[in-house]
Length: 270
Ligand code: PGA
Image 1 (spheres, rainbow, N blue to C red):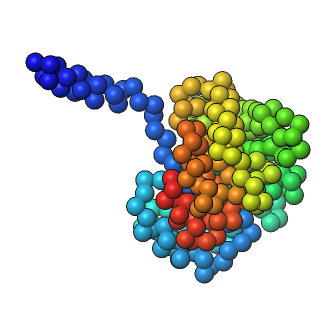
Image 2: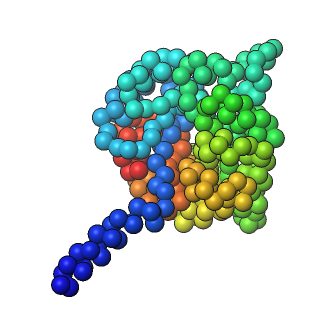
């Protein structure tokens, strides 16, 4: 009798459990090649990623001139194509710039915006990045919106305030359904290309803070579904620890995304 009751209790728990579960966010690992790489890197990268058995979403973001040839190589592979920048206007006399329609034509489905290197070397600010995000969303390209504080700002204890203003300006005035298509990458500037990774706890605290902001800005539901990536010296030897954290849903990888075996190992860690 007791055994039968226990059996039914287990059955009931199993049945209602999916209803209680927090929606699972699919991990996303994106590789930011920056101004690196060449044609020869594309095929080994695709081969290394194609053979993985993973449910993680994989994106590579090569420089503009390699987008077309990368799109051909990625056909019939699970790897998606991303760009590193876009211009905020539709078209026109903007020598040297690339329009969203051109990205679309190349088969791009993600685009990094607001990277700290663009903020630092090209004077991009939150207001400009906001325009770029809106432009991408109009063309159904997922923005990967980078936010993060400098070392000086962290030492002054201003990291949450800085990230809050980046999020609220960058993602203001965006419809809920569009917000659902945005990805955020928390990249503390002091961790980019320096070998100094944020500790998993530091990163997770900021991710939780960002999720709270999204919840206030949009809704708890959007916040719960949004993929928030960590970026800054992610390597095969630290990826597992970072990706195991509750609010870290993936990684934006710079240096290690140029080595097929390292990038594949990071995907595997997710
Ligand atoms: P990193 O770069 O992995 O080389 O630190 C990350 C990034 O800039 O996106």
